[in-house]
Image (tube, rainbow over all chains, first blue to last red):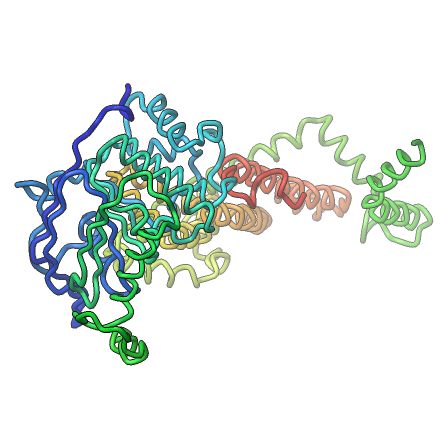
Length: 266
Length: 264
């Protein structure tokens, strides 16, 4: 009954030598990553770097070509019911009312829980409306409620805020952060927005060319002050890394970005 | 205030002005003897014919038998079309096995089969029901198949990741997603249903509206012929209204079908 208020331990995640190839093209070339339970991890990278592919593998939507995905000691596939994915587009069923979308896949007396989940994202009074009547940000909040009602121990977010306007984004980031602190699940957020990544996550992973290029711990107290100098310098650190090439030892002048972009464009 | 009301009434009546004027001219032309009743009866004669058929109760027998043929044929043809559409829409194997055969049969104009159908079933009820079923099967089949294939794969993927599979996936995601297309098929099929029935009944029948018209033709009762044509028009309109009601009911979620956004 008080599902949304109980504390659930997140899933500790081990990604061991994960590879994924689509035909000839190798998208992920052996990713090794260990994420302790309850950590908020942001994955950044250029488009096509394989970050969304990694998330789809974790969600079980695609099968890896090699390597293992572990939740603690067991296989991640065994705790599929504890894993929920939020997509870039909300993917609400347009023919179900908001509350029925939140209760998708549930049986028994789920309505009180659904109302509670909607209240947690601030949309309790929109329960009986059709999704078509909601704005983009509201749809994503419903999608978040739909994910949270399953009490996930691992929440996968695939650029869920990418299509929202700047103010709505910040609101959603704060909402996700608050719910994460409340429930203690493990979060993997894929984003192309480095500022968002450093502002919200404990740890930022940069994927480049199908490999982990940077693993940066963001050791700042919460709530974090947006636009603070510390966040800005972290953001610059990641961005410099994205725009420059391989392990550049401290070099005052970054290379002209053009050749590197060409390389990444492959 | 009152000019406003008058204006409103005028706007309401405007669409009816032309039909009423045409009817009046028609009536006048027949009364004046410019138009032979052999070619067209006076509108008043059609009303009289309708009234006498109504009074004798004969019209109800014909309406009931025609309605019954239409309904049974539609249920059989539509049901089969829906079933085949589900099979080919949901399974790749079913599509490979069935679709090209169904498409081949679809390209045969079903009314061209009438001589063969008469040989098979005589001029019995079965012949008419068979033709109606054949006429309604393909529009529903095509639109069901098309509707299922066009369900947003992103929604299906999402639903699967939320644990839906098998029947609940079909019932909650695939069928509602295909429903707008299926209902388009239903409206097409209703049109074909009356068209087929009109042809089938005028060729061979001993009851029904088509029989009413053909029988009246033998006795040069043009008023009854026109009445039968009007009856078909009314029945067709009723079927269309029923289909629209279904759309309003089942597609409430769709912005295009919500009452306030509707064209009417």
